[in-house]
Length: 431
Image (cartoon, rainbow, N blue to C red; front, side, top):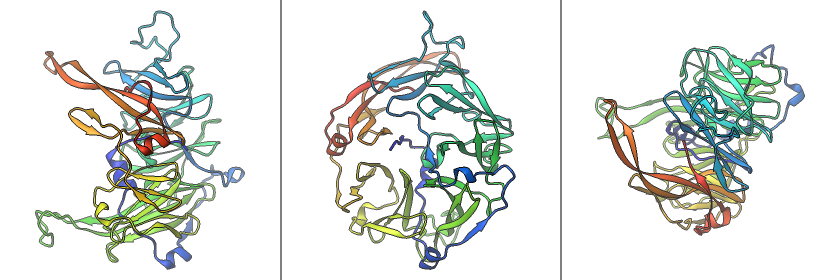
């Protein structure tokens, strides 16, 4: 199990949408349709494989970048085995500040890399600065060298990769899958299937039964998409609004899409008509779809094949299930919430997670964040060190900013869950 942490607001709003269990009728019967199969979608030889997200690290290494200039970035790699962080460059005397360094790239070309397998990383151009132009899919060796373009996606831009479940590239062992847009960022929603062997690219949303879909994540062999037909009152101009309250009305639908059969099926629907739109919270964590009912204090996991919700607990304190509710991650058997008690997925036990020492950054305090979840071990921010940075203003005048250096450390899942700050530091975090 691997998972990275991010507070990308758009991803959280999508993954943590207001939702409720589907009706019994939709659970038993469902709604399905088979779109016209594109000529390039011959996938019978890989049907049934599990879709897995790609992350910025694995058990061996964690990949970060830092800005060299307005045009250049430099990669740093945290070695999670030897517990050091360094620039992946073996050129003697290299200062790592120009394109002559193999670890330096132009911004917009390889702004983020993801671990594809034991030997390769994958990067997507036109991600940091999306525009109406082609996007390349690039493979690199694990030392960030030997860059080679394996596919060109015409007139496309990918989402800001690296957020929550909907913001990761995915693979099934043969193809890469990445959510993005055609005709400019935010325009025509697309799910690109990329064959790195021959460069073939297929937009799997071309024949989708509905439009304006956003990717939530993946469950087994299904992608889960979010569709919204919701309106919000304006507390200033709407006479039906009460005070500053914003009221949502309409329906949201979560669709299952099987990329091997091109079948679309309604997974869950949530409506203001039955009061579920404002009551429910749902998210995909570690390949599971969780639902939380704020009104009754229940936490459930939903089976993508049957639509049946398996109750984990109905004893969660409802005063802890407010609008700021966000599930952080799954650590061992525990489902972690950012500001609420955690839940044991096997027993239904509810308890407050013991606090680790607070980290202080820019005057605010927070509990350690999870950057990489390796099952029994987590990569987290373990300490912050104050320093003063000198920055050049727009008028050319230098000024200073008091901030902190952030450091990453490994901690066992058991220590993390029990509030024991037993870290093994691996180096400074850069971004």
